[in-house]
Length: 231
Image (cartoon, rainbow, N blue to C red; front, side, top):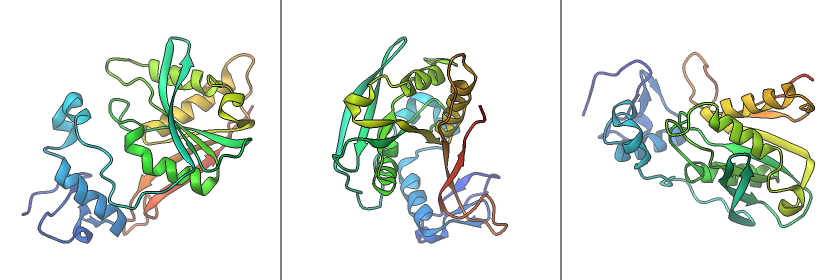
């Protein structure tokens, strides 16, 4: 099965091994190729043609990799100025005083949720030995800008409280993938600029990338870029 590729479009040749999956003319790494094979089975049409409603109905959680175990995973609601938002908490151990990462999922600000980043949040919690709070922030178009970023900002102020989550309030990071990375960066700047608050927290932007012949955008897997806004 072949088709004419569109620049930048993910193409999966269904009758070839996963290692033959490409983005344009560039081959994917094995892990990314396995994901491409999953997407090839799930997607009934390109996302740009599905629309928001159908895209949200796509199955999630079909990660081909083994599950990553953490001490506990549980659901909470986080108070914000306009009400509350759901969140999922990952703890690598039951120890008190752990650092915390407030994580925002990707999805173009319109789709996605904690289920889609479950494995990644488990991985971050286990490898970094931190509590991860995966925020199910309000999605567009039902909740237009700046609803999502304001909800994330309110959540990072500690809606659940350091005592309840048993975290170290002096070691809080924000981060996300794709649109979530954008929200994390915006949140850090808002914390820096709003009166009475000086941001001394680091912002981690987590990007999913592929290896290309030109070496761009970088090695396969997750790239962590850390920056701290100046005060």
